[in-house]
Image 1 (cartoon, one colour):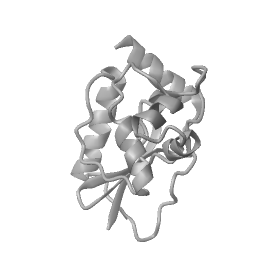
Image 2 (tube, helix red, strand yellow):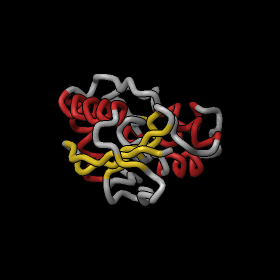
Image 3 (tube, helix red, strand yellow):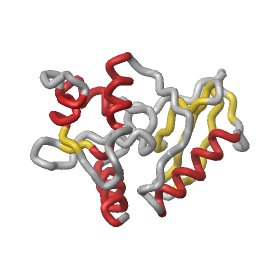
Length: 159
């Protein structure tokens, strides 16, 4: 059963989901690829894992170099999961280009597929897809909007 919680964070209104004690989604309400809340989902504002998610996102807003320590289980293809795992290895305050990430996972010719996988990241901020830039250093492709991507990079640069 999918349990969800909605709250207002320093980044905007967040929808987080968990299943079986593992975080499966963290979305800014209205972002691209945000799922619709299904009638089979269960809302629980006091769910321990979802409350921890809120606490850790709030801490990140103040101390962006503090790690997330949540059990993650994003749903996706094996390729997407490989890309998302690679994203978790990018330290706060650092950025990669899409090409660098494709090379890191051993798929240098798959830059577009890597970019598509990053765009479908279901754990916004927690899996730091905002740390990937276009080849020219340009801010590109963030499901929750480039303004938030720029903000996240700025707070990490100050840490």
